[in-house]
Length: 65
Image (cartoon, rainbow, N blue to C red):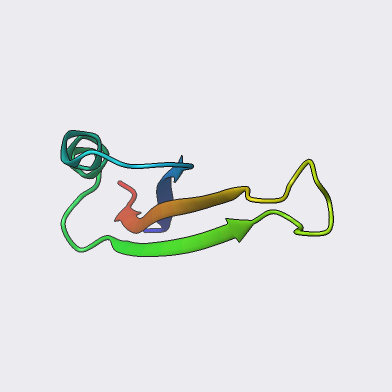
């Protein structure tokens, strides 16, 4: 029997409501690992200066039949 690794992620560029977070977590099984990754724009580039986002990622493993 093999395992399948699954993941779900969402990127937030501003505020996140509790409802949005709950909706994301409703699709994630208990025991999943949650990680956060912050991205920032290049301050030297006026097009990217001030850009900020956080990606929330859930990863879990499911056995196959």
